[in-house]
Structures are given as C-alpha cells and as structure tokens.
Image 1 (cartoon, rainbow, N blue to C red):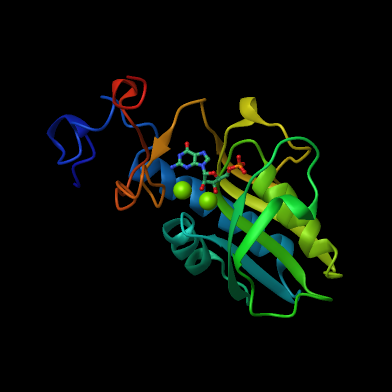
Image 2: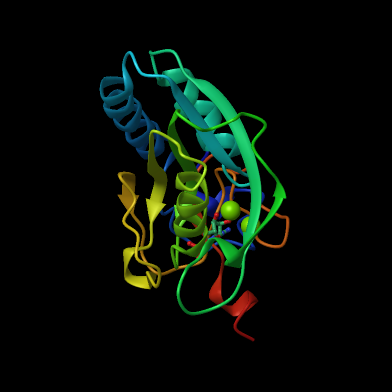
Length: 190
Ligand code: 5GP
Ligand code: MG
Ligand code: MG
C-alpha cells in the first residue's frame, strides 16, 4: 500500500500529523459523485467546465469515472472583491473554448471556500444562456461561505483549515500529494 502517513512522508515537515482525507476516502467520494453525475446528466448535452489549476487531479479522476458522454473544457479565473457577487468580481485569465449557450454546464472546482469563485462563474455562465448551470466540488468549507451559493454536488464537508494536496497548493507547493492534508499552522501563522 502507498504511504499516506505524513510522519514518514517527504512532506511531513510541512504537514500536520493527520491526513484529512486519505487516497481511499477520496476515491470513494469521487466514485459517489461520478455515479450521481452520470445518472443526472445521462442523455444530455453536457459540458463539464473545470476551474484551473487546482482541479486537475480531481477532474482527471472524476471525468474517467463518469460513464456517460460529456465534453470537457477549462476556465482559469481568480476572484477578488468583497460584498455582493456579480460577474464583475471574477477575473477570467483563460475562458472556456466552447460556446456554452444551450448546453448543460457543470462547473467543477476542487474546493469551495467563500463561494465567490463559483457564484461569480455560475452567474457569468447563466448570462451566456446555458440550458442549466450546476456546480460540483470535492470539498466544501461550508462554515466560511460568504457568497449565496451551495454547490449541487459535494464530496465531503471540509473543516476550516488550509488544505493541500490532490491538486491544491500552498504557494505552488504540495499539489502532487495523492491525499488531502493540512499545512502546519506554525508555518503560516508566525
Ligand atoms: P472561494 O472563491 O470559494 O473563496 O475560493 C475557492 C478557491 O480558493 C479554490 O478554487 C481554491 O483554488 C482556493 N482555496 C480555497 N480554500 C483552499 C484551501 O484550503 N487550500 C487551497 N490550497 N486552496 C484553497
Ligand atoms: Mg481554484
Ligand atoms: Mg490556489
């Protein structure tokens, strides 16, 4: 079996002792999401839009487990600004290549925190006259929500910690971890 215990892991100096979500747990979560999505979108003209960069590992696993036809596309965006969410407070660095009008769009991000990113992009895509726009995240930090959004598909609720791994980075590091861990607090609270 793969080592997932951070105490004997190359990243152990950066990680809190406990793994938050193990490879096995993630696999179960992704499998369950793929089952629901396959069932709900069967026979529909669906475009799954991943939010780069953090989504790459999650979407690679999710997409190959969805056993119905779907198109894949990617948006790279960064959110900023406080207050009410509008299409104006997300900056699109790379837009989707697909014309989304008339399509059933499923926006996928690896984690929802304040909710600003997903709320802004959901609004933006609805304004392009998509047939429907739903959202999917592996992890949902429900307790930190500020924007008015609740993801439609959620792998698991995430505690209020800064998490890394499975695509999620800390200043560019730790994206490659196959599990989700927590950065040691003393490393960023000092
Ligand atoms: P939101 O717009 O919901 O506040 O933030 C969502 C984005 O922030 C995610 O796509 C992700 O890139 C980043 N993010 C939020 N929480 C975390 C976290 O705990 N760890 C990491 N690495 N990124 C996070
Ligand atoms: Mg992101
Ligand atoms: Mg990031």
